[in-house]
Length: 194
Image: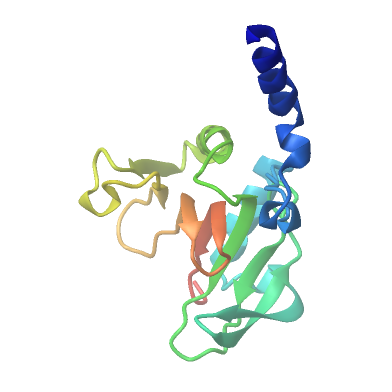
């Protein structure tokens, strides 16, 4: 008797994944996109240089993105980071400073393998531009607004003697509400006509 019950549990245990049919079957499996680009440092420096003049030298094909329910104009950057497209907001939009965003990893669930990618990117940024920028990282341990989250924000601010505009950019590990999934995201703030 014990043997037959044990056998039934074993068979059901082995067949459970096969027998489980329903809504889960229709869902697309979670995919983690973590491309690799050998030209990371070179491309990062190109974006930083272009940020000094509204990213004009990197503006490629025109496109739109829906943000908060409204279509907004963008240009696809002619330079990518980690193989992912970057988007530059349209400079003629009143009230917008030039910005460039690159989404280099995505995942449907909190944050999983993206944590490793975030750490790799952060280290690569420091290695690439560390002499010219200062760095600060914010997470749930040192920012009250990030408590109870897995969000991370890595800020790079250009070192500069005296007055003048300083470039800054961020690397985020966050749940991007516009895209609807977790991302490792670069956000560059441009300077209008330095």
